Amino acid sequence: RYNSKVFRTSLFGAKVIISTDHEVNMEMAKSSTQLGATETLRRLFGENSDFLQRKEIHKYVRNLTSRFVGPENLKTNLIQDIYVLSRNYFEMDDKAISSSFDIKEAATKMVVDLIVKKVIGEMESEAVRELGLCWTAFRTNWFSFSYSVPGTTVYRFVKARSKVTKLLKGVIQKKNASKEGLGDFLDILFDEMKKDGASLDIDRAVNLIFTVFILSQETTPGILAATVKLVADHPDVMEELKREHDAVIENQGDNQAGLTWEEYKSMTFTHMVIKETLRFTSAQPTVHRIPTEDAQVGGYTVPAGWLFFGIPLVHFDEEKYEDPLKFNPWRWKGKDLHGTLSKDYIPFGAGATLCVGSEFAKCIIAVFLHHLSRFRYHRWSLDPKTRVLRRYMLMFPAGCRVEIAKELSDQS
Image (cartoon, rainbow, N blue to C red; front, side, top):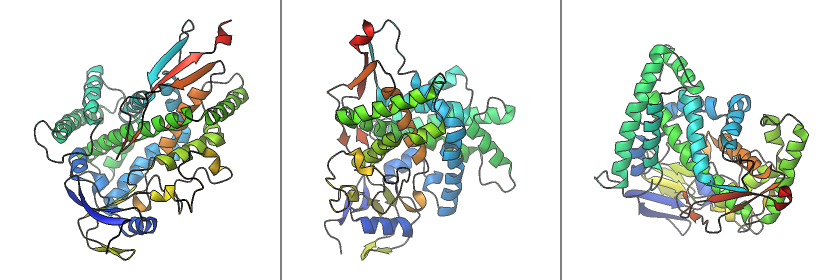
């Protein structure tokens, strides 16, 4: 039996169960560990992607990935790299009155630069250029006509993926032979390959790095851009952020070389804004499963081989959140700001496939907000044409262009 909260349909060429029933979503997240993906995504990531494999391999790959994007490495290494790489977009010539840039594009480029530096390490300029050209093929229309026919998006995906993996494999094989110029994550992967009975080989390492690249550059920048849009639409939120980041700068005194993990964690209102943005923008499925046998959940039967997409409509439940259609960071005051999963809050999924990069994403958003808010004699605004479309991924048809301008009082 199905109803308006749980129903069957056909989507992206696949048989799909769509659920907005929170209890069903949570039960499915716990009972099934096989990550579900459309045919388009399987073609994009490859049928043998470890993120789409059985529980043991998926868990192994998650543990490896968490050693790079997890809290410990963020605390000791990545937060400073994120700070330095993102700061470049906010610097203004002394004689300039204003500057502008697309914040989603800037975040995407920053994430790619970060991953090249920290995952792969030193690369020849030609390889970097080729890699950059390939990534542009993956920037739009992930979820579309699922057949690889010349002229279609999926066909371009498959061709670009083949070129990227060939390029990455060549770079990794050279580095494996020379052991020079290794990135932090590549160093971890090489250590894993040396172990007796290792599950990791060159091909699996290439696929893992490719997946990290794709997921990082298409998810976090979109959430960041949506955060900036929401802040720009709410001047009281913008002012409170400015007060908080002014205090961070003031407490640093003359030591303003970057951000510490402790400073990041102390940004209470910033984390309230991020948490509210994640609640407010979660219109896409956050529970993806494909059961290998018929699954009984909440009185429903999810047939084996069908995709299950659980949408977190609980984020807009009036019984859970007061005035849920209002963007209100203050609703999180006094509550757990660092948890990514609770009974009524699942922006990063649930169960065994809870997003391993959740803290990585939040850290990037917080650092960009810090840069936007920290200039005492500058103000920022957003292009009024900016629109956010809630599709499977957040879309910005007119871009998300930020202008930073010096206040007139600073010119006297």
